[in-house]
Image 1 (cartoon, helix red, strand yellow):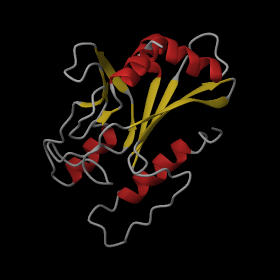
Image 2 (image 1 turned 30 degrees about the vertical axis):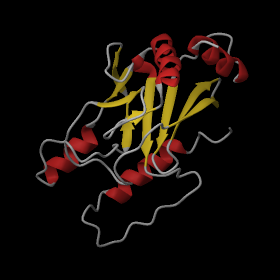
Image 3 (image 1 turned 180 degrees about the horizontal axis):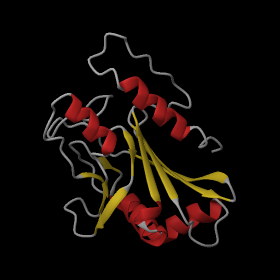
Image 4 (image 1 turned 120 degrees about the horizontal axis):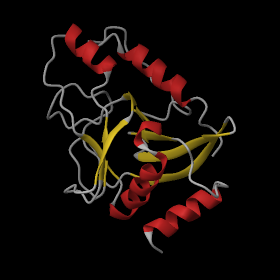
Length: 191
């Protein structure tokens, strides 16, 4: 089956005869999966899940260029790159306002950028899902429109796991960030 045919099967399984009007991509670092969801008639519908084909870094947010970290937070997609060296790629809007604000507070500069969801099976801080899967997601994203895509990147699946952060943490804002991510993920439950 072609990537387009596989995508159509995922959509049909989720009861779509037309393309969805929005997407939420939930990247779970510990579980190493990217979930694809949409909202229709006030219900959240799971379309499919793509396993990461590689992983770098550790659990925890991205702090600077070259730290090999996948960011954590609420993002969008800024552009689709058909000429990616990783087959196809979708650029995540890291750093967001929260990332910039915390970096400024802590006098951190050079936060990095160019965080992608892409094909292939290697990475240094991006989310690779393999060439066939990125073809599906890229095509779907073109149909939906990048302004209608939300990306939630979390250290763990907060719907199943709680993360306790020690009080003496160097980054006191982590609790607030994780609370926000947890809230954003709450509606996405019925797989």
